[in-house]
Length: 162
Image (cartoon, rainbow, N blue to C red):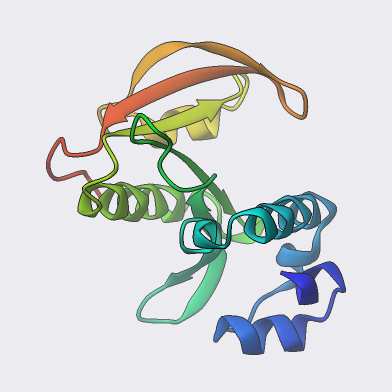
């Protein structure tokens, strides 16, 4: 993440084990890396939960990043986060990322609930979570993103669509 903040794609790609693109050094991505570096410094165990490069197989093509906002909280809740690079959108990658995040959450006995917070104007993300069993449980205000609709699904609800 430090290499990404320094816009050193060769070093970041070497550390990630996959060729990363400029999408990982955009202003929006850099904000995320700054946040996650601080988070991992405060809680090293959170590193296994946060954003990872999303790789389409078998091509090995990096299409974006996905992960959780952190480890499960005291109630067993994790919040998902994913982003698809613009040139790879509308090809099913976000749904595949979401399916993998839900699989990962269901595999951990400490996780009971998976949350998604989405801007009401983000039609693409609202469409992405449809069909995965998410139910709207409320709204919240995010200082960075404004109004968000909050959705949750039990982590162990069984197979999720791909």
